Length: 218
Image (cartoon, rainbow, N blue to C red; front, side, top):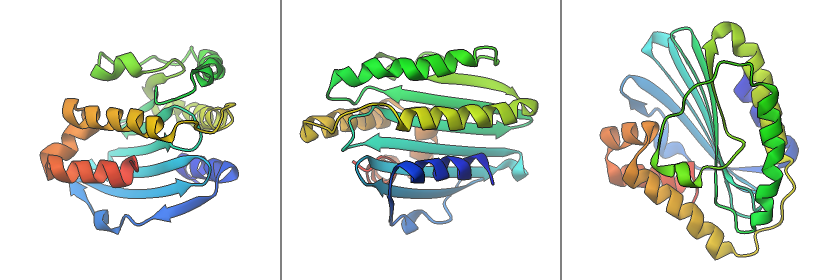
């Protein structure tokens, strides 16, 4: 069982998943990478998408999970795991899409978890347009494949912690959706590593459709 399979198994212990039709994107190929994209509605949480990409004759593999909470007032979470040319990269980013700011007080649990692994080789995430809405408790590590098993343990522990964070039901659905939509729109307009690849390959309008309907479910 791969780490991604184990992460999905963890999600299923917390939420009931209803698959979304993503057949339009079956067999999607971009720049020599083959993508497999799935999406789900998670009862009492919101939208979850899972994307894998493989290419470079098997030398590169990327797993992405995006949590877009709509019912649970949790921050939006993007998880990326990239294995390329003997390197292993683990990234999680949390974005402020919450309505009840008391939720943010609980992010210290993720901060404490990440600090336990501060001996791992740090990866500089650089400066980005979204830094102002990026929350504490994120992580960015890069190492050789000998650290993959540790990265697997950390990824599972992080996801379990995130899904177990105390939270309330969204009190203002319209505001929650708008904050999420603002992030997605800004992502399309201002770009990002994966976003830029999609826009260049399939155009902005098709990228919007993919992001709205499948990756973020807004």
